[in-house]
Image (cartoon, rainbow, N blue to C red):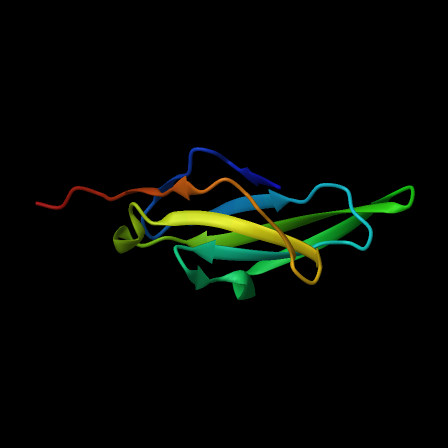
Length: 101
């Protein structure tokens, strides 16, 4: 399970794209996105590619982070069988904000 980019540095109120890629598996994996413990998968899309008899799933998350998201943990999970869940590395968000006088 690979989460990119790492580290995650976002600019508050500007959209950013993140990708999570599963390892090859059969059946294909279902990818779920989390910010801390909150499921944000509804804001993602996915593509499944076949390589021989195995499948690789790539999920893209397009998200606009807010300044209060700073220091939250981002990660994704992949599962292709009940009880078989793989988790990506957990990345701490670094959300940059514009300086206001």
